[in-house]
Length: 259
Image (cartoon, rainbow, N blue to C red; front, side, top):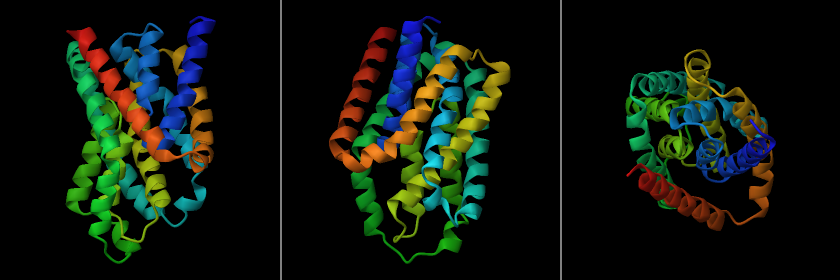
C-alpha cells in the first residue's frame, strides 16, 4: 500500500472516530476510503470491522466516568451483542459477495435516515419517562435482549449506524433520569462487543488487509479520543445533519455504481 493510500486511510480513520462520537456512523468514512484504496467490497468490510475496534477503545477510554457502576449491565449487554456479532460475521462469510454489494447502499441509507430522526426518537423516550431503576436497567427484558442481539448481528454483518440503532434501543429501555452520556457510553461498549467478536472471526477466516487495517485503526483511535472534546465545542445538530446527508449521497452513489 502506497503512502497516498495510507494517508487517505489515516485521515478517514480520524473522520470515522469523530463521526462515531458525533452520530454513531463511523463506517460512512472508513468503508468508502477502503474502497477508494482499492479493496473489494467484502475485503473492505472485514478490514473495516477489524480496524474500527480501535474506535471502541478510544471512546471507552474517554468514558470511564460514565461507565462507573455499570458493570453488570455491560456484561449482560456485551454477551448479547457479542452473540449477535458472531452471527453477523457468519452471515457475511456464508453469503455471496454479490448479495453484500447489493444490500450495502440500503444499509447506509437506513443508517443515515436514523441519524436524521434521532432527536424525535429521544423525544419519544422522554415522553415515556419513568423513575430510575438501575437494577432493572442491568436486567434487559426479552424484547430489549432480542433487539440488542439483532443490532449486534447487524454490526457483525456491516455495522454502519449500528451505534445509532444500539443507542435507540438503550434509550428506549433506560430509566428516564439516565443522562445521555451514560447511555452513549454503554452503547459504545455494547457495539464494541459485537465488533470485536466479528473481528476475531475475520482475522482467521476472512481477507483482512492488515496494512489498511493498521492505518485506518490508528486514525480511528485518534479521532475517537478527540471526538468528545470537539463535540463539546461545536454545534452537534449541523454536524449530524451533514453526516446524514453525506451518507445518503454515498448510498445513492454506491447504488448507481451497482446498476
